[in-house]
Amino acid sequence: IHVRRLFGGAEMAGIKFHAAIDTTIAGNHIFRCCRGLWLDWMAQGTRVRANVFHHNPDQDLFLEVNHGPCLVDNNLFLSPTSLLDVSEGAAFAHNLFAGAIINFPEPNRRTPYHPPHSTAIAGLVTTQGGDNRFYNNVFVGTGKSDRPDDNRDARRRATRAAGLWIYDQCPLPLQAAGNVYYFGATPSSREKDAQVFLEHDPAIELRQQNGRLDVSLTWAGPAQRGPVSLVTTARLGAAHVSGAPYVDPDDSPVVIDRDFFGAARDPAAVASGPLGIDGPGRKTYRLR
Image: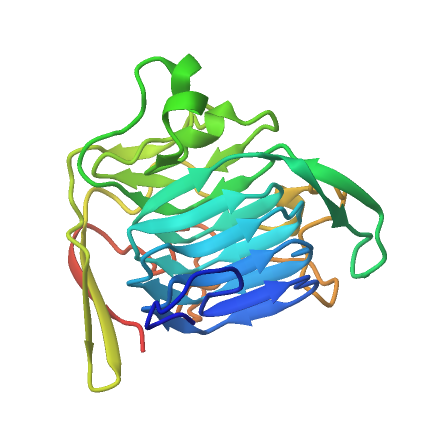
């Protein structure tokens, strides 16, 4: 997990997998590693659910040359960089991204994809980038948008962003809806119903003491604006490269109808994020 930083190299993370086919990674508390979770190729049918990441100096989640489907839901990514995405075909639902997102293609490596629930190799392709789904997440920036004024320069000038605008440069389209953006985090131009609180700082505070882990933050505005719907297999569709649907490892359909704590979501009043926003104000949540 590379706590002492005595040497460099690959394969260092709180959890590192190659070929995490049909693997569920849930309920972990990953902190003070070089990076939190590293899924390195063939992460197909993988589900990353209800984990807490913080104080990881590289990033909380690294998706490397995967082609989907991969489902990431109800996690708290609290390090300065939440996600390094050198993949495509992932679905992110009801997460809290308190750090930046880094995204770029990998045109020089051809990596496998598979039939559903199989280790057989269906083909080898490069990673174009995109084909991701972001539904009902919360994004927190650093107070100032880093989006270039000229989008034509985005690929060259920017490799990290708070929010989803970084995906506007990807060749494969992004699906995004029901997301909330705070403090400079910026939506994708493809998202039309984003709720944006540009100047509001949630002031995230993490307290770890005597085996307990609490997070406090200040919500602004209503829990959601407009229709925020449950995330399901039918809504997510199929990954572009593999053509496989977003289902659980046992092939059962996905309905993300419970929050980080396992509490049921009201289908008539779905709130964005993993914690169940219940209105504006300062809130404290016991995570462990």
